[in-house]
Amino acid sequence: MTTNADLMTRLKAVECRDSTYKPKSTPLVFARAKGSVVWDVEGKSYIDLCAGFGALPLGHASEALLAVTREFENAEPMVEHAMGDVYPSEEKILFLETLRSLMPDSYKLGALALSGGQAVEIALKTAMLATKNSGFIVFENAYHGLDFGVLPLTAREDFRVPFKNYLAEDNIVRLPYGASKAIVSQGISKLKSTGLAAIIAEPIQGRAGVNSPPAGWLSMLSDIAHEHSGLLILDEVFTGFGRIGTLSSAGEANADISCFGKAIGGGFPISACFAKKHIMNAWPESSGEAIHTGTFFGHPFSAAVGRRTLLAIKDRDLAQRSKSLGETIKFRLREALKDSPLVKDIRGEGLFIGIEYTSPGFAAVLMDRLRERGVIALPSGATGSVLSITPALNIPEDVLFEAIGHVIEISK
Image 1: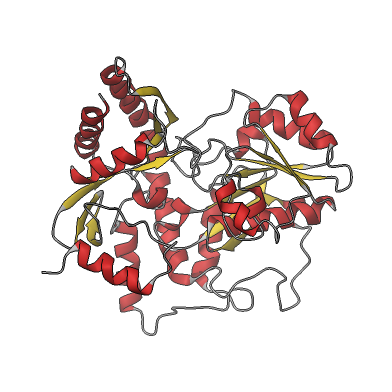
Image 2: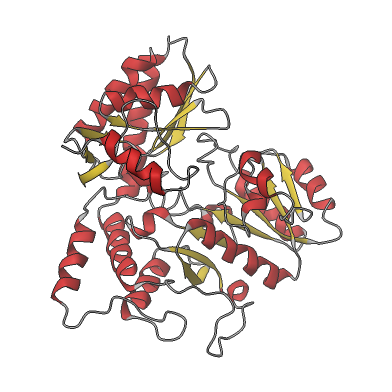
């Protein structure tokens, strides 16, 4: 029988050593999955509390995916690829229409890409075109992707330092997440040579350890950005479409541009940048060759799965389920762990929950212990002290409670 260890050895022989985490014990290689349960190549099952970094809002092998698979299988002939910036597919158009219908009323036009980082890059370019400025306010512990265009905005130095000589960081001012209006004003004043293009923020910081800002902070950022002729960009790649109990934070924040990814593709690579019409119209009319495009932007299969995923989130009111179920989970965790010397804080919104431990790196240790118990969860935060819980929005309650029981047992 092929084992997890065997396959990890084979992977090590062919892949860049920086690409995949290789645990020292109990390695895991996915073989199959359904809903919120994954089986490895040895047949062991695991409860998935990650949902593909939040990219699987309906779980593995979702009804949306299976429906599209059947439709594409029966299509004669099917369209497996379209030249999105020249000749679009019907599915691309349907996806954009569906996504637009779920946006705040102020958002009228969008552009598609493959990853969340690419959606952020479109947002940066849009802000520069709309304002004619090139300075950005970003925040400590932020994560906005690792492509060169967005890497300067991502806070962690271990991601940036190896490439620092290539990065243009002179037009970036980094401030504390949750900074006061006075501090943000001071930051903007440092962008005299570039002018303010935009302030970019996550509604809740994910990779940083599930950090929430003060109430009203996002709308304050919008006000101060507009006072300085700039824009507010929300990076909703992780938080959007149900994760924190809402479809979008843009309306409440009066944001000008939002970036979406992960959940909107139902596990397939598609992302989007949506904005107010006059802002998105800063882009020129395409004359046959778009100035920002990609071979697979608006890919028909991804768009088809994404559209059905979005409709399922809406029709089943999974954002509200996320909100209420998240409150239940936080209550259980707080009650069970209130006397634990290991636990510093339990926080988050919806099914975006973080347990912060008192010791740096401890959440990474717990990731390994949970894997041995048949639970998949990930550490987050700059020091690996936060265990992130981001399951599928439709995870059965009994399955979720079983996994949370394991988390509680090893956290006492």
